[in-house]
Every structure is written in C-alpha cells, then in structure tokens.
Length: 198
Image (tube, rainbow, N blue to C red; front, side):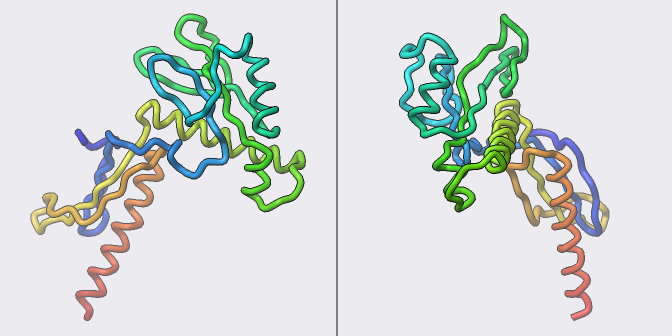
C-alpha cells in the first residue's frame, strides 16, 4: 500500500488516501466498447479473434472490424511506452516510443441494446463515442497507475490514529476518492453524535 498521498481529519476520524497498488482491470467491467488490441509483449484490451497479420493496413483492419461487428463507432488506439504505458485515441506523435495498437468499437447492436432503441442515429453515435472515450481514459488511468483508495481511522483521545473503520478502493480520480471518504467520515461523526444522545 505504501505511504499515503494525502490525509484529512473529519470530526473524530482521520482519512488517508493511498495509491491502489492492485486495481481491477476496468476491461472486466460491463463496457459499451470493445477494445481490439495487438501487443506482442503484453495483453491489452479485450479478448478477440482478429489476427493482425491478416490485414495489410490499419485502414483495411478498421473496415473489416466495422463489417464484422455490424457497424458502429470506431476509434483508433495508440500507446506511448517510455518507462510506463499510456493510451489514447489520438497519436502521441512519437515515432520511437509510440504507435497504433488497435481500435475500440461501440457496435450498432451494443448501442441499440444499451439505450433500448431501434435505430442508431447521429445523436446515439455521439453519445456512444463519448462513452468509449471515457472508457479509454479509465483504462489509461489503470495502465498509468492513477487509481486510488482510502482508509478511515477513528482518532484516539490523544489525536493519534486508531482502528480502521472503513476503506474503499478503485477510484480513478484522487479528488473524488477524498470527497467520498469525507462524506463517509461525516456519516460516522453524525452516528457517533446520535449514539451519545441515545
């Protein structure tokens, strides 16, 4: 777990935010998009049956994916690997340490199922695009280690940290992690005040 990144006292509780050293892979979630990636040294994205060598270019592969997956919204995926790995839907413009690794697609059948619609219009395609962009951003945070968790400890009368009373992990935003921890610490404080009155 390592050293905390930040701490805050709320009532009789101390919050500590830590890096999540064992985060869950967000590709295991119920995602709208399907990541079709090709990587020799590591596994990226979702399981698929496409073979990179079957296509002479990324453009040819993109057309085959759209045809096979019954259309949808498709975006390219690029990685930059320099001491770590980061992913984006736009090129990093680094010919030595980056390049395209595949695509993410929200298929027309998946879009229809997700929103319970009969026809995929421009409006639904734009919404699907925003969702798969968010999925890539979440996956990038997983790859770069930008995942957090918190622990809440009851403070002793001398102000030192006591027993752990709550924890939660898997936040991809440090501020959101702290915000939720503060809400929970406030709830513990309110409960303590009620218990005193009862």
